[in-house]
Length: 363
Ligand SMILES: [Ca+2]
Ligand SMILES: [Ca+2]
Ligand SMILES: [Ca+2]
Ligand SMILES: [Ca+2]
Image (cartoon, rainbow, N blue to C red; front, side):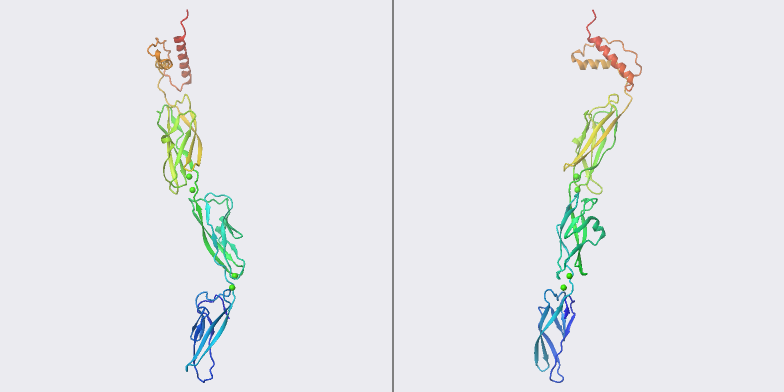
């Protein structure tokens, strides 16, 4: 008997012949070699090749041996060699399906594992590498992604290797390293920021106030910014289409310029609450509420006469050339617009002028 799985060249048996002729010598030949499983070397029968002997495929091998003596006498004999059973290891485990979508949450079955055991032993799958068990587990014959707190991020790690072991419970085992592929999904933009949150009053319209910026993990994505401003004082240049460049690690870094539509006046409004938003090409976006502060500046002295003419002009263009003699200007030294009292006085004074101008003369 010879054990199955014996390596190439293992000695199966030694041939000998008896001969009535004293001093006869013999040589041997294999007339049939058990479908190539055995070979002869002198008088020794050897295993022929790797995995030549398999109990489950052939529990016995028949060979035909010829013994020849030096005088031309011969004898042919059929010899049956028993193959002994040993425990075969299971086959290396295979996996059907190997993809997981980026950003998937929850436990997800990736695919089905398979392995066979020639002995008919029940095969158990397991993950022998501890790090693999943080992300994956085996449930019966399924390879499963464990879900949170694990995060599947294509841009950070597009593939995960997992070593799967198949065991027959009798000491036989085989392993395969499978590659789980993370498929890319659209990620929302991140790190939306506004570079500056203040503007000095009287700054001219269409002056840049700040840069709005955001990142997006997805390579080649494009971002569009919007600003919500109920007063209509601020807007984004280039319709908010972000100027993008490749980010250091992955994805893109984009920005747009926030500018004034009209000059702002600290005395009229000192804070503008805006909402800045950004959306990517896949429709995912984020928003940020920001307050833009108006910084006070030293306004030029207020010319009452000029203001009155402007006011008349605006109210009724026909009156522009018919400005009546102005009443005497009150003494208002060094009027500054941030001076609330002065502003009040100016308003009162202008109202008085209007009343004088439009009221019918007293009888
Ligand atoms: Ca076996
Ligand atoms: Ca087995
Ligand atoms: Ca992505
Ligand atoms: Ca994106």
